[in-house]
Image (tube, rainbow, N blue to C red):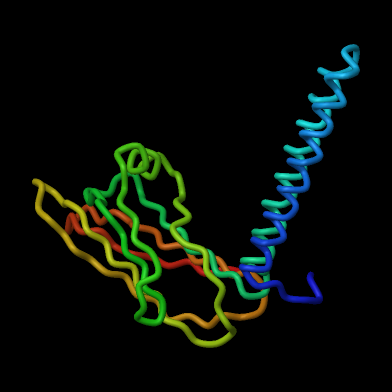
Length: 184
């Protein structure tokens, strides 16, 4: 947990400054390595490995700064394999404000039908009551166009919160049904 807050411009400036420093170190190290022919390749490989490790750590730090665990809400979509509904797109609204839109590819739809879960959005929310709406567009049996919506009123608590919307098959009505799962 961090005891201070860093805004996005400061974070990006710090990352840019660190990248410039590493680039200058790399160029001076390459010049020195060229002078010492016997270890030049090994030195460059070690520096490259260190740079990749630092990049990974910076990515993790950026994720922690942008999405702190105590305010994070992650929204997922999953679909039963027997669903006659073929999604084309999904639009996510939080508190009646559009926050994401996703157009599904054939590969993504295939993965969903085989049990994959799609993380459609991650957001920071304050504690309290919120309304999640997901609007789906797609095609049903015999190519009939559908536009469906699922809504959930939920209370954001402390800590990371996960919300999954499952699209279930209803064999009798040939209509998709929605089921929300919320967990911390």
